[in-house]
Every structure is written in structure tokens, then in C-alpha cells.
Image (cartoon, rainbow, N blue to C red; front, side):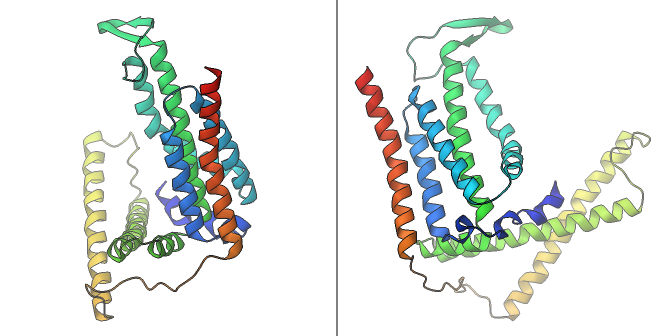
Amino acid sequence: MMEELFYIEKSAYKDSHIHRLDARVKIICAFSLIIAMVAVPYSRIVFLVGGIFFVFISLIWAMSHLPPAIFVKRLTMILPFGLFIIIFQIFFTNPYYTVFHSIASLPFGIHIYAESIEFAAILFVKFIVSVSSVIILSSTTKLQDMLEGAGRMGLPAEFALILGMMIRYLFVFGYIFRKVNESLATRCFDPFNSDLSYRYRMKQVGYTIGTIFIRSYEQGERVYTSMLCRGYGSKSHIFLIKKPLKRTEWIELTTCMIFIIAIPVVVWMGAVRMV
């Protein structure tokens, strides 16, 4: 899994209209989509709004000419973090319903409620749409372009610099991990080898983790010293060239924003009229 860190931006270097689009347009659209999805009231209209948004995301993904396997793989890696919280919702009551009907009883006085299952499904739809928007943003935009785009939109220069250094040191940590892992492999050490005692394996893994962090810290110190020698200081910032949005990018941004805002409003108004 750590090896995939070095290829995390591979899809962002593809060429398509979505890839060439200014990072500011993609950042604004992605976060607007998340805010619109989260702002939809906890009711069954979430399923319709979420379905429309997911189709919209699928169309953008198709325009990026990226294989669906990349999207599915990244979504699968993130799903466990959200599912763990969502699944537990079926065992508890929530403030969005007034009446709860138990459909199953478990030991220790635990009940599964029909309304809680519906609430968990609503959370799942919100989670899928929100994560999908982040996936398409990260898969079609380089990290450096995102930093520059955020800086042009007013992100404080200190934050942009810190984020840039964090990204760089993440790859440094991955490089150190690969070197240490290769050293262990040349010494024929396998932490999953059952022929070795469990205590010995855990001891060596602990030493390895400590070594990785120490060597990463030492590498970071060397990089920081080199930065100081090249004039880095407290007033250093990422250099940003003025880059106004093109007319077509303004049109695309406006169209996306109108669509993102209009869909929840139209669906909600339709639901109110039906009631």
C-alpha cells in the first residue's frame, strides 16, 4: 500500500479537458457539491438528490478519460472509515425521527430500528457523494496545482507553505519506508513468517518503525538545512503567478454552480408540493 504512494498522482498527469481545467474551478465545484449534499435535510429526498449528483460525477469522470477501476479502487479504500460509523447508526435513535419501530432485538437490550436503518442509508448516500467529489478532484488535479489554486483563492500563504512541505515530507517518509523494507527483505526477514516467534517478530517490527521515523526525521533535518542555505525564512511563500480564469472556465464554473444549487432546491420544492 505504501508503494502506491509514489503513484498517487499518476492519474492526475493524464490529458483531458477536466485535467486541463483550472484547479480553482474544480476546487470550488467539489466543495460546493459537498456542502450542497450535506445541507440537504435528512429525509428521503436525499436519495434522489444523491442519485442525480452521482450521475453528474460519473459524467465528469467519463469526460476525464480515466478508467472506472481507479475510482472504484480509491472509493473502496475510503469506504471502511465511513461504513464503521454508518453501520452503528442502526442501533441508536437519532433526533431526526420522533417515532422508532424496532424490527429486531439483540442481547444486552440492543434494538435495530427501521428509522435508524433509513437514517444510516441517508448518511451512506451523503458519504458516497461527498467522497466521490474529493476523489475526482484528487484524480484530475496535481497536488501542486491544488496548492496554487487554493493560494490564488485566498488561502493564507503560511497554510499553503505548510501543506506543500507536508506533501513533500510524505513522499520522504515513503522513500525511507521503502529503503528500510528492502533492507529487511535482503536479510530474509518476514514479519508474517510463522516459523519465527511472535515476540521476536513484534520486537523487530517495533525497531523497524522506530528506525523509519528516526531516519525520516534526519532526512527532514537535512532538507530543512538545505532550504535555509538557499534563503528560506519566515517570510518565504509559494510564488504564485497571476492567472485569471478564461471565459470558458467562468462559463463552466457558473453552469456547475447553478446545477449544484438548483438540484436540491427543485427536489425539495417538489417534495413539499407532493406533501
